[in-house]
Image: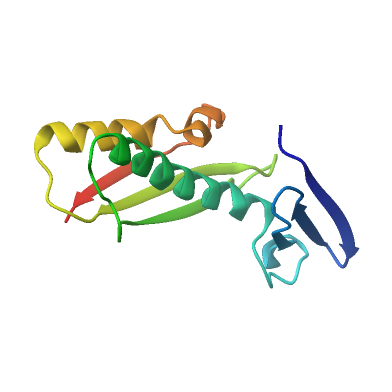
Length: 135
């Protein structure tokens, strides 16, 4: 179990603390939803969680199989719905995997990414097109 403590700071801003590590982050409502947009919005963190989870899960599978993905990068583009209710409509993923890979290795790494816990936790209505670029 992981504890995250969140405090509302006012002006549509929250601060969060990961209790085990003491790490902190700030969220701000986006400009298109009454906020100042000075930090990640809560829905931005969902996209961030997806991208980091995909890379981390790939790295775990990589370590188990002697595959190093250091330098790999992911870009996640978040799109919100145009009509209420306001929610994430789409998280487009562009994954750039550093290294030289054969087909079996690509399949293992891509399978890990597409089965990461965040990917599997998102509602089926959220579209998640994912493109992999092997570099």
